[in-house]
Length: 269
Length: 249
Image 1 (cartoon, rainbow over the protein chains, first blue to last red):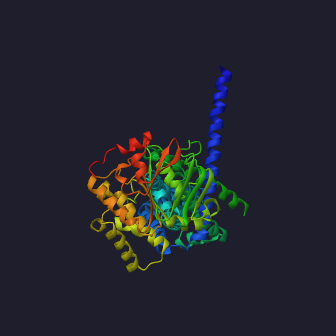
Image 2: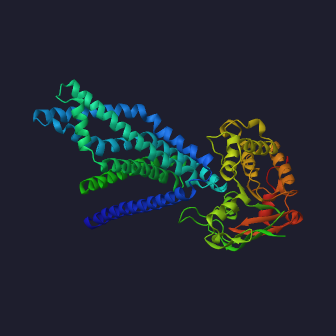
Image 3: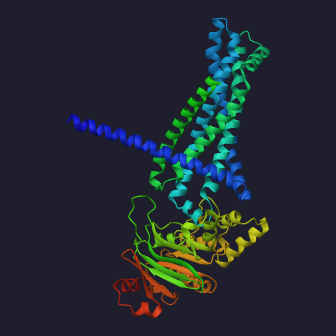
């Protein structure tokens, strides 16, 4: 009895591991194909495809500005509210800028923005593409000689990458300003000049380069993972909900792993 | 006559996903320019898979498939796209892009493959719409027109690209008799300038239209012959396909 239970448990773990390996393999291949298509076909049918990139930027970037503003404002308040009063108590308010740079610029800003875009746009994207697949629109594109990766995936990858980068920069600025406003209201002895100096002293050129790289990677990863789940396998309409759920879980895991990788890079450089 | 499409001793596994059983096993078929083929089979026998494979949308797992004298497995991606533009596949449901209007559906492949100016594009779309009698519905989305017209819109979208071969999947399956008459008349006229393959589960409306008839039977494609051969055939499946509905056409 115990042996059969143990075997069943091992089988279950084995199936999960195999599933993960298959998904990773599929996403890797899909990402490489997308990269290849982006380089070789970027200029093809530009009058038709480039407006799709702008549309994606509008959908994943411009339309999310109000929500990102709200979250950034709250993030600034929370981080400053929690840390500055603590720093003040131990007389270390000169580290407020360093804390803001470490927490907002390097960590929370990019990750929170990526997760917001995933929640608002990534889910829509999987539903759109898996519905396209289920209704045969993808096969229709192929029959008309239109490359679905070029027409459906490339604009979304480039659009999401550009959107998450721009939204993160915007979120960081709003969070830093709102953080200082909260400190000002709390009568923390910190002038705007001191705060800016602390920020400038804490920022290195690597922060800008890695911020760009990280946010663009987040955008590309979310787009590739969601497009993969929506397009790579034949889907029936009843399965769209499950596919969306899988795509969100995979995207969150991918973003967190990517974030961990960047933490290591920050520690090394 | 230049052979347009050759499926020679092909063992075609038309499955999309690994592990799916092949619906097409043995196909030995040569389609010549100007032919009007009618392929009959009961529903679910694999007609769509056969047409998709002939169109180059699915690769045979075994055997040889020549498109315009070129082996499909030897074609580069660009060459394959070029071939796909010469062989149009028209699905039963039309497989239209639901978020676009009918004219946008027709404009999409034109805009993708050609760098037309706006007026030129509009002219091509307008030509395709008027040729297929769809001009009145141009600004509507597919869900705003009757399903009867969906495959006709798919036909207009394919014709805009000027294909040499049209593979039409069951065009009379979901249309009323008036629409059915339109299809038969239109394809008769179109045959003068294009090669046509129609898959059907009912031979009867096609016996005065098609020039070559074949059966998809037991996963194999079997030639029946010309119009007279079909009418005189003693084959059980042919008789079944000749006693279906469409008396009114």
